[in-house]
Image (cartoon, rainbow over all chains, first blue to last red):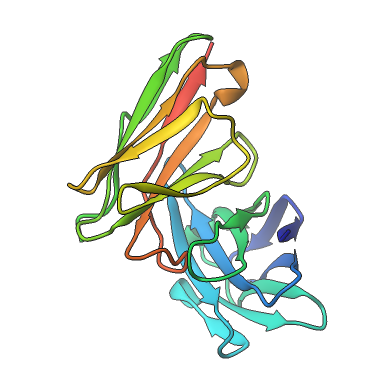
Length: 114
Length: 113
């Protein structure tokens, strides 16, 4: 069975600072990996996804993530935090693109200080 | 895009009651998935419907059931509500069964008293 672990339920950064949200996965076969963002009272919005193409994946709003098989990691980064980045971020894994469920981590709440 | 619309946005029920949550998928999306997000947790997969047939189910009891209709709408039904059913229920639609292009609704917040 696949799973993801998000280290740090709360992360706080200053505006303009680097954002690093950590995600490690466990999967018996090559996974598909996703990062979603959830703003208050809203659903989930896809930030980016890894589906076995390039290991460095660029997403929306300046975010990117790098798939590292040797470390079983898929950490999310953004060079410079903006106040509007404050939200809950979820890492998710799927075993294949067709028909399998998404298994989510427990989320990381990002706070951005002025 | 019309997006995914869920109704109602909030709902309060008492233990033992039954509830129906509704979802209107993006036009043309023939797959709908339902997720339960408990407070402070990530979403958990309930089940998926593809072309009106259940096409995968998570670790949820049979009192959680669903329907998908030809007009891109769907329902999640929960019988014999329990306190632990209190959660945000998210509907997500897609074309085909792939998970990489899910479009999520804003959810229905269910409180069971």
